[in-house]
Length: 367
Ligand code: UDP
Image 1 (cartoon, rainbow, N blue to C red):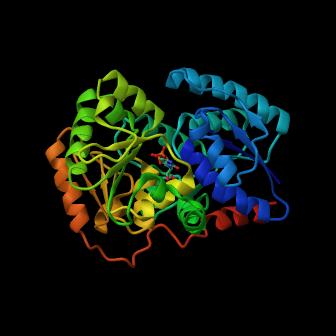
Image 2: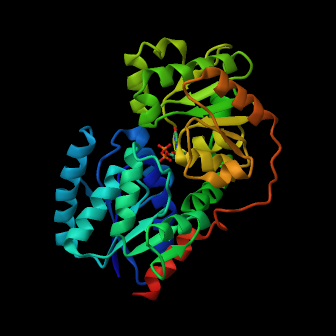
């Protein structure tokens, strides 16, 4: 059985790392990776292929840098060309980016069965480009690999139910378990940055709702500066955020070295360094879907810099709390609350770390 997997953005490389390994180990399955080029610089793309040993993409479309509409349109056309050439049995897409939607539409137009990994998530906020991508992809898919019970219910409300909905757990949990051990052996990031275990805040910010609103970005940066007066704040900065910080005149507040009172802004790091930073943080503040779950996987309290989350289990279990990015006082208060929190450790709403194997088994049974 031949599967074309479409990836393009950082979180998709991490999910694909887990799934591609399971597919490669399953006899009878051939996977072809197609990279759209949505994330193209080395620190956002190549580093993951190298250190996570993801198979080389057979195709790299080199499409990025345009508007959402331009990118999605160009990707559909180019992915269709690859699908016509390869004639796969399935197309697989991940998550909620432009690459996800483009892969879904290209498959649907050619009537090639579509599998969606991380299906069924909803923020119920249609102003997020990711929400539109998720909803449309779920409605085009022939099989939906779902991470949580709640995602199954979300789909049922939209009339998507039955055999095609497969509750497999979260493939990011598989990645966190596998690479978490590797990170302990291989990452030297704590020494490089002069950090001590359990005594710093790790931050990431990249959602358009935060980066594209100068007031929200300024609010978040002000909160980080306040926290940096107490404990080091390490902030690997996404390229979009770096660009906006520069434009809004916020860049000089941070530096690449640890200084009291200033967040330490660094380039995006590879996954092994990221896992190491996550595992050893006192608290994590993020608007990332992946990082908020990884905080939980490594049992580190988290503050979500958003109005809502698709991963509501994290809030219900007490591992995460939402903070209003516009209000630095709310962000700092939530960070203090998170540092003092002692939630229960036993719940595992994201499966057992064998999600990728379950996905591989699904295809094998149909091979
Ligand atoms: N990540 C990383 N290096 C960084 C920041 C994030 O490896 O400097 C990883 C992180 O551990 C997670 C994934 O990137 O696995 C999350 O991607 P992102 O926040 O870009 O997207 P989202 O999860 O919000 O879709």
